[in-house]
Image (cartoon, rainbow over all chains, first blue to last red; front, side, top):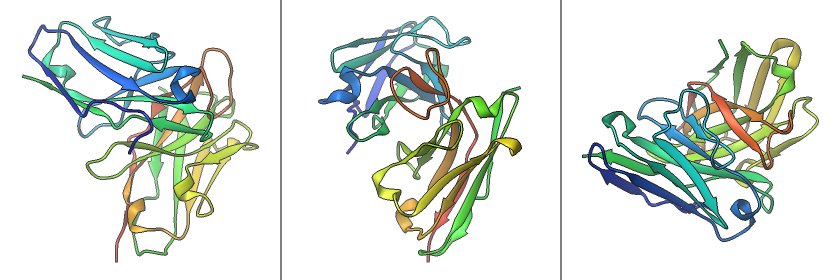
Length: 110
Length: 128
């Protein structure tokens, strides 16, 4: 059971907009920044967003991140086949004194 | 090119030991906190351990406390994870990751930190 809760799966057709949520019930999201990672099957995770809405260079602006209270969201607009991957949220948990990851959301492009 | 390369994985019996290494290049290693993150087959990501820039601070997930020891050698640009008393449930792909931050530097965790560079991982299999 992950400390951060994500839907196990999401899907959309090319060109659609998809949103993936990440929620927590305690301090790990409410007071800390949230990061998002993309993992294409068979490859290492890649930083997608940090500090909720900061996009590293090279990440398309079709991707956007946001946070409200104890929930964070990743949105992908103009869905493309290469977006098919697993997406993880992560945050530092002051209570556990550890990094915590969401269980991951498998995005399928239909 | 900024790069992290893990090594040292293998097959080991329950109760055995392994030492993982992570070689860093392309950046000033001593300026960054580092972490180990693992991924069991078909499962999600799990943070295992982290260490500050000087090696003076470190942390572990509860399930490995007392069994794993993280360390670093800044002169060799290397990060290590000594894994003792291995269990079947430690079977996973182990990644090392750099901790970046826009507001601070050198810690392995906290607000405004993020894992911005990842290696390709090394596989640890614990089986009898």
